[in-house]
Amino acid sequence: MTVLPILILPDAKLRLKSQAVKVVDDKTRALLDTMRETMYDAPGIGLAAVQIGVLQRLVVIDVSRDEDARQPLHFINPKIVWQSEELSKYEEGCLSIPETYEEVERPAQCRVKFLDYDGKDQEIECDGLLATCIQHEIDHLNGVLFLDHLSRLKRDRITKKFIKAKRQESVS
Ligand code: NI
Image 1 (cartoon, protein in one colour):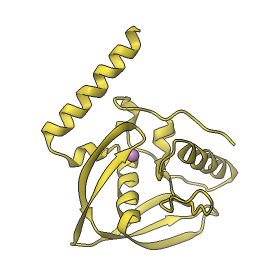
Image 2 (cartoon, rainbow, N blue to C red):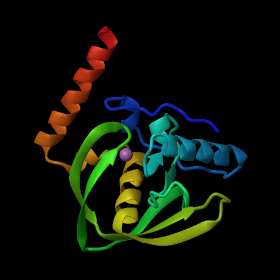
Image 3 (cartoon, helix red, strand yellow):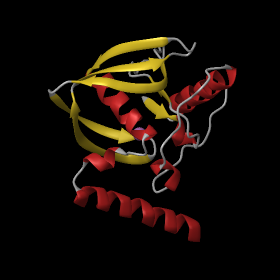
Image 4 (cartoon, rainbow, N blue to C red):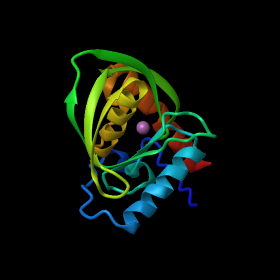
């Protein structure tokens, strides 16, 4: 199994839009396997391909948080087709923005169309943590980070902290 390094803010690639997957083949599945292992290794509950530098619309999620009974979900070209008017708040984090957690308000439920690991059409209803997580990951595919849902003041403060950390890392 392969584990790849995860891109960290302010990596410019995180702001790029990912491209739709045209053919689901063994290469796609190998990439999903690598993403899944990278997510478990981190550890995290969701990962978009852009976070390992691949600009394809691929997402892996496992909100079960149970190492002995893992329930990975693989999403190819996920698309939100419905969102509830009801909102919910979760304290979100992101593997690309380590050790940073902020409350984000999003639709509490959503319905998502996607292709699964075998390339078959699927549609699921999401609520709770899964709804939050899939919306967060689909944001990644569009170059959007959870910071963009915060106030400008908070976003700027966090971004500056990471720019400074990067600068210190490059001089040391
Ligand atoms: Ni994230």
